[in-house]
Length: 225
Image (cartoon, rainbow, N blue to C red; front, side, top):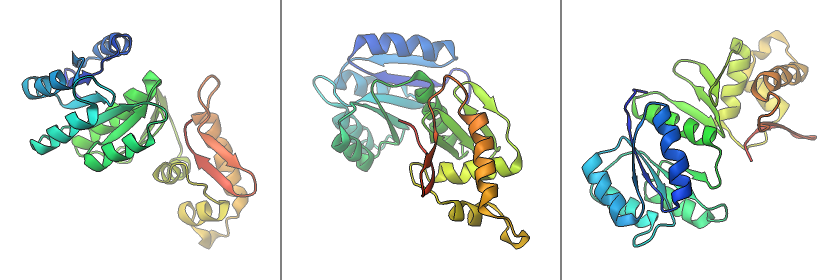
């Protein structure tokens, strides 16, 4: 992820724009803002961003309309939609039209940054799995949570990667055992419980949102709020 990467923020809520723009600028991004749909389209053509943060509820032309026009013009720039908490149909429609991801407002800045980094790395040929503000880079085997790097053993990484490939899904101990361990050595499901406990200590530290959840009698799930 290069310093100076161009990001276009299309958001009519000035309080959000005034918060996000300097945060991204502080991290080395070149940020330009637009506050309605037509202005966002014009800035996309003129500024040629490498990523767009696009609010769905925009005046004059909504974010879905902006996205539709961008894709109609052949512009494949990565787009993260900024959506209201209850806008499920808008999220689905946006993804169907070619959005790459969405973040629900009000959002945590660390989660937004994780999703920005993941999309930019994907555009550069890297695969990055993202769950909330957790990033798992499958090319480099690096793991981050927000600005924090997480050091994992090989087995811990393999377990976390499988969970990150199946976010929100309840994964039984037997399934995790079959996917992550070589059962020829007689490993039992107790090993899964032990390694999930190891991961919790490294991934879910005090003060952070809990991501690794135990589903009683069923297994484990990796998910945000």
